[in-house]
Length: 362
Image (cartoon, rainbow, N blue to C red; front, side, top):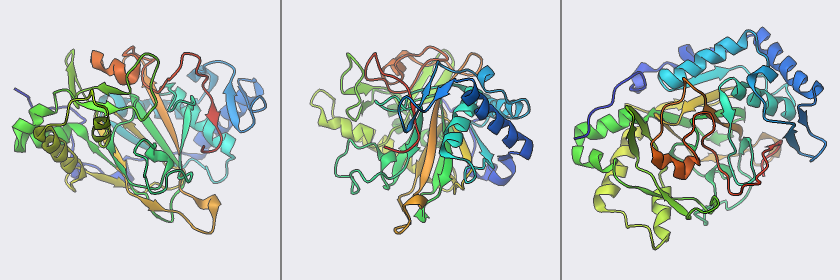
């Protein structure tokens, strides 16, 4: 019989005050970031000349390559919150309006080094993603389009990594509100109000890969929404991917109980009781633990006469290290590629995939 989930990551919106919880970077923190970025460039650890418009890494970097004497401990505190606390953290005040694009992407990558190991976010091997409307499929006629490349609303979901970071470079003219909720609290709500539906969340759920298929894998995979393994619980949600997987004849049809269970879970996440709304401003970095948080964003409209002011976020996927990463059920291999702590998550569609950091959305 399913039981209520507990822990620090079980919370409601009334427990959250973003203004008090956000960490504001000091002038000294910003200088450290700028000096660490310059250090990467001076040591030749990153290169922008080999492939114009991209940053190539000389080798996989670690936090020793990006020293942050006073900001590092603050990021460690954020990491504790992500891994063992409420499951989210926010950093504010990165001077992205002053920085060059190169400084912004390297600063974000460097912060990620103090959290864990960056993972590729698409078939192109991007270690930093660009969440921006690039003009593809503007009316979402193709269901396999990755929604982060469009202006439409994002459904409630988790990203395919232990932690996701979103750094705002530019907000939209209208819309684009970011929200997140405790997936543990949403599950508890379903269990209290409709226990038969909560039980369905533990069963098999099939998700589409949106045509990004790793070697030897099917174009869909199976992963329960609620996974319990070695005393740990992880929730994985990707609304609309379940429906899209129905295009494959080998995928079992969604049952009425599954449809109602998904509806109840998403409804709980969307409720004022659980949902936290965050209007990201330039320089805000939102960090979420994908195993106990789910997030979404509203549709948006960009400035029609100024392309330079299009809504633009930089995205980071991080695999956490020993002592911070929870154990993952074997089923996660299908989406994470591995359950090995420190090197799991991300998207890899070929063995020879070369990682890079693009300076612009594509």
